[in-house]
Length: 146
Image 1 (cartoon, helix red, strand yellow):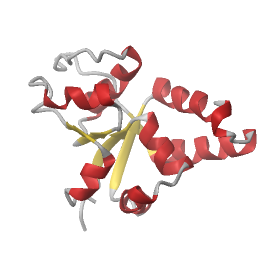
Image 2 (image 1 turned 30 degrees about the vertical axis):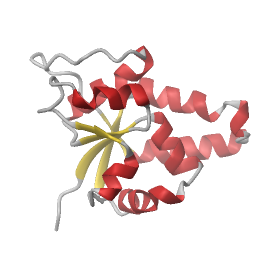
Image 3 (image 1 turned 90 degrees about the vertical axis):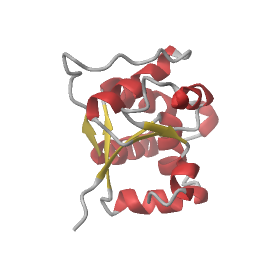
Image 4 (image 1 turned 135 degrees about the vertical axis):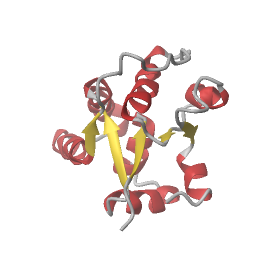
């Protein structure tokens, strides 16, 4: 039996998987559904997902918003509080995305999956090299990681 690997998904990746059901991410969706990955989040990231679900451009009914939110929330574990000696993280230019870096660090995940350009730009930052990998879900799948 293999141990589940740890991931953080940013909000756009969660939307791609749970709402849009992006066919390019089918392998990842199936791996998550079978328990191959443990997903981590925290309250502020979950609240961001709840807000995004309510955006009018997505046209998601309130009932479907609740279902999508509850389905995702049931999949995630809360990230632990940061350790006293937690490594410093580089600052993301979009302050709203800093939480995903913090969750990844605090949960000790292997990968942070995102399509966000500012987060992806930080993937090469030396302060993150020994912590976790930031990459697109498509690259994660192409690398055979699920």
